[in-house]
Length: 447
Image (cartoon, rainbow, N blue to C red):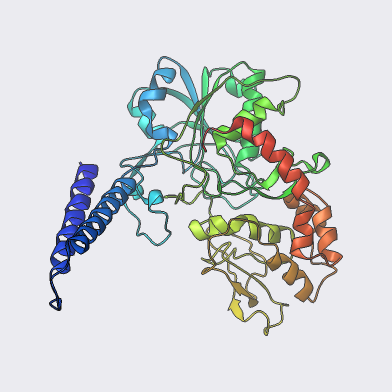
């Protein structure tokens, strides 16, 4: 019903626009002479082009991006009469109406019906699907835990289902936890950065499914940073939960595409292959601007923070605060020891939702406000380089272990200390990036 109203209103506005256009062409100052036949033909052609463009724009806006979870007809038959486990969190939802916002290709559109949705677990239970349990990634099933905080097993208050944490003592589903499961469904919104741990959880879920001969169904979702590939490539000796595979920091793939790569490249080990089914996103390309309706984790509250996250995430391995303890997470950065002349934006981190112990709690930090930054299509290293150069505590600026885990290599820290420019550092990434792009191309589901 809502979609019909949108269509009707859109075309109503379109034809109102055209009517006004035609009227306006005949109003105003009276021409000094009667237009020739050629002039009349030109005016008619111009009106035709404008009308055609306007109508096509309206149709484009009404082409919805449809996430995998919304395509219930494709996957409900795969779940019927089976015992099901869900790997999900607060982003695992079915939208009640099509997602029209992304195709407007702008970040300045007010929120729409994306705010209306049903959680996947609730929807499947209502359809009599036999859900046995839920596996929860970092931040927990409801997405409220701090970054890195261990999450305990629990029971979901609403459904009574057992929730098994994959970010506590175990990162991988155990054989015993899968004993009563026929199929696992993975549905989590990712943001396309290697050190964002949902793809690490994907790896361990795939590995457990392969070891226990259980099929995995992925309900795919767009990657809001899927429009570019950039950053240092992880070196195997620095593998951790912040990066399991030898990929660039920004990989430009959806969860479904990434799962295909994990399988295809043999990254599960021991010649393991996961039985994989993917429900792809409809009407999506890697260049489609996609706005998230739900924050994917406590400290990524909006589109700007998600876009800046691959660049500002490096600060997690330094003494610099990247907005945790404020309402501007990953949209600002600062430190008490920055010079005020170069860093004239001030803020004071305090404990809040998703940041119980923010860096420099209660201290005035001087830094940069990046909330008006244009949408990035590459990693911005200059902020990190300048922060190091302007820090009064260069000796303690890097937490080497944490920074190396985030960067995936020791080389980046060494280059910054040695005074490399952003361009010089990025030049050293090129060979690995080109090699990765060739591998990535084999597993793409979208243009």
